[in-house]
Image (cartoon, rainbow, N blue to C red; front, side, top):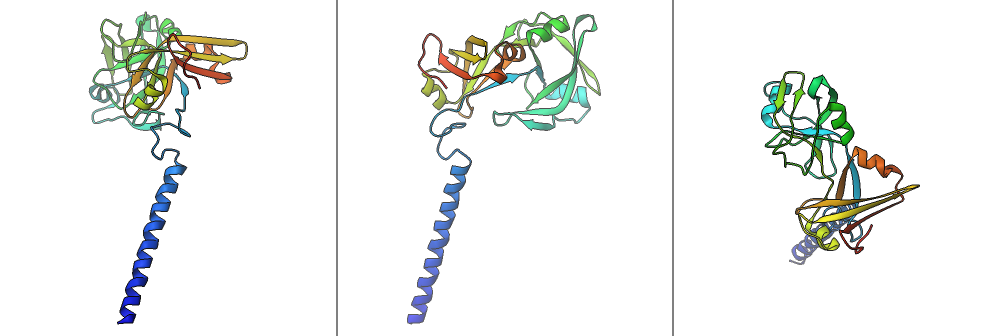
Length: 244
């Protein structure tokens, strides 16, 4: 009888030890990946601000992917972007403007969208001969079009060529930290050696899963010499309440 009791006690101790080890490993993994119970993208209990240059690119519908790259084709992820679920695809397209001016290799970003759209910097639009307006992504009514050329075919876009307005992705915890909400405007100030630039009208795009990231285009990145920045400040328009 004592032998049975001792065996049972020994087994219970082994089970408890295994459970404790499993819980410890899980906690350690959470600490290692920097998340734990923190909102997406946060480090050490506060938002981790990132400013990225969004080079010229395009978004495609499923239909246009098949026309440009062949029947049955889908976008093939090449590199994950900072925002979870978004990626730079392996595929590129040629963008053709009036009088056959062209950009030969414009990256496609995924996943696919309900409407195809080309996002350019001002110098790109000048090069193409297209008077692309500044618009927020997806707001393409009344915008000019272009021709997209892929290895399997071409697509005439009647609209969808824009210069993407600067914006900041953030989750709801980020928005609370900065005292802003979806649709409001912020200011980004970039200080670089002999070059400091303040960008107004940075649109807040807040949702549950986003990580704090400002998107500016190539021309804006060059104007502020972003690669050499010594200080970056993001704040609600009209105040100096929060900075990174």
